[in-house]
Length: 358
Image 1 (cartoon, one colour):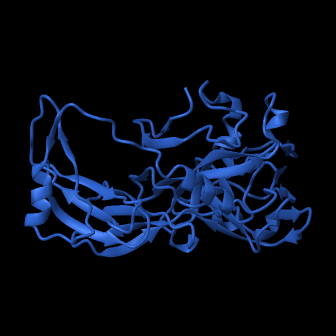
Image 2 (tube, rainbow, N blue to C red; image 1 turned 180 degrees about the vertical axis):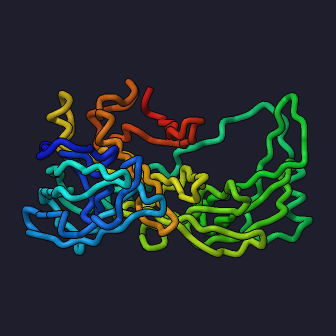
Image 3 (spheres, rainbow, N blue to C red; image 1 turned 120 degrees about the horizontal axis):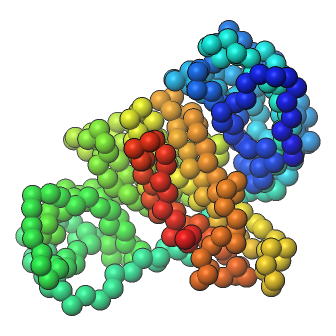
């Protein structure tokens, strides 16, 4: 892999995929950024030469994002598994200040095969990932009576409410999704509870829903994680009447994960995806599994048109051996990142919390 310039001018401030990137999805788009904005008149598709080692030459469509600083190049067909992709960007692009961008060439590599089956296996193995420890604090048994008194459905899971030793109450509410793995007795519900555990809103979900939350604009959202129907893998947006009015999903072939999502000040959405890949770990650590499933992470920002505006991948920045000491790097499945949440700091950077990285 290489990045080569043919002139003396500007570099792009950001590009995705990165030169030499591996495990790229066949649906990948090309993203370029400049802080001064692109001059629209020079944005011609013939400036981009896309060649797959198996696909041959591929045409593309070129579009500016809503900020005019982000250029999205979409190949006219998906890449093929296992191929190397060469990208040449010819001279002729310029920013709004009249500066020309250097012509560049770089390459990246498409993953060898489908990985949805790996993601299904991983999520099934992690289905009981969280457990509630025993508590010596006070358990509010009134919640069970509240359920009965409110004539809630018989398949509504009865909450166990634990009060701390020095508990205090206010008028705020708890937004949560109740996930029941025993569907013979209970079902999955979105619910809003008061501080006593009494439900003030509930809605049954036929699919596996996660991360019921209030967004920064006051609307509600929850994620649907239904790997059997990937087209349903998205965050649904609800209005004040709990009616779905929109949805948002990840692009470039990634499946949304329900750990976290943010609505940004520019109206874009930040989401994450777990990205399992087959890795020959015997080349990385002694005793490593030659067919290990290693779970990476992808973060995306999607714009107002639901295009991928920004993409970050753990494969480009973290080594598998960066995982904490308690992660077995000789195991069959290696969850070396395990992101739980992210936040935007005062400078606009993404702060990422990863359970398996120090």
